[in-house]
Image 1 (cartoon, rainbow, N blue to C red):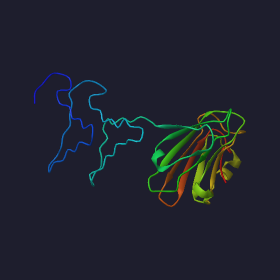
Image 2 (cartoon, helix red, strand yellow):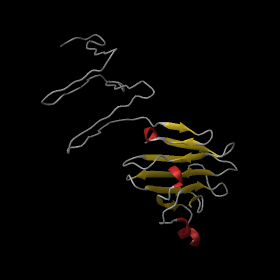
Image 3 (cartoon, rainbow, N blue to C red):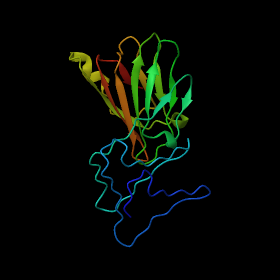
Length: 194
């Protein structure tokens, strides 16, 4: 089809879905010089987009995704649907307490201290299970740093208000059995595994 008008091809299904299937390849291309030349939009709050590939994998090229965030205004229980989200902690006015979902392969979260105060922030496991293993990497080089990195399984990761700094972060990922934590902090003892 050759048409220079906007939306010259539009596929809509108001009561169902649209399937594109082929026995050979399917190409979707645009020569438009715009950041929104091709848009896949799952606009429903519970909507999602899944890309699945065979052994050749998915080649991202210039793929750009937005970071989803979770607001923590009290005790927050994360679910598998929150996987991939970034949680910004504000310890200036509340005591952030977050519970991880039960482990499942590939679930991951990032926690960042975005506002500092007199409270600790806590990341705990579902049912207080002792299934977190992790380490802390710190910019502070002192003889006591080795005590920060613990390999034993625990059930809680804490941001400690007397040592944490803005930008301190913890990344956790699950293999389906355990959660693996990797903390990066400015000062030693800013994040602890207990």
